[in-house]
Image (cartoon, rainbow, N blue to C red; front, side, top):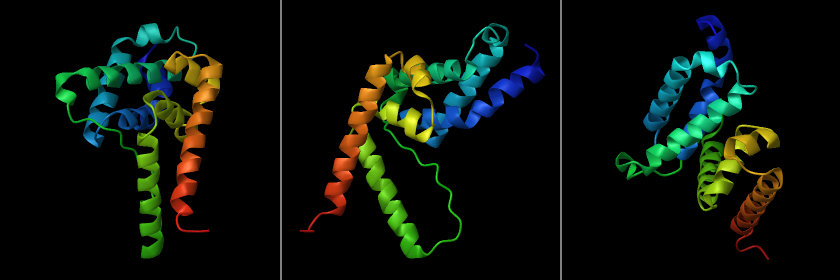
Length: 169
């Protein structure tokens, strides 16, 4: 695979890889480092990755594994989940504050989920991966992915309902 082909295939994955890394790691800087490291590894092995049917799934799997390795390392003692990919145009201050509050609530609800459900929500609802791709990335069976997603959504829905209906009879 030459440089031009490599860039055409791998460069469009940059944002997805970054967001996925950011879901797993503490900060933008950690996610940027992970993204850079992943692309360096892909570049070093560009001849071998041409053989893969789904390079995107391969890259996301590499991202997951790299991030897990970082989480296990001694340097990662302060890592927690964070994610925000919202860019807004002009809105009122009240709407901005309401949106920020909602995002904070969603972050905390997602953080309260078991690790596997967090990843499934990230890949399916945020990154818009298909079920078979999530199965490949997380090395899970389709029924387990669907069940995990269903449970995660149900728990978030119940918590949001409880949050917003508080004091309403």
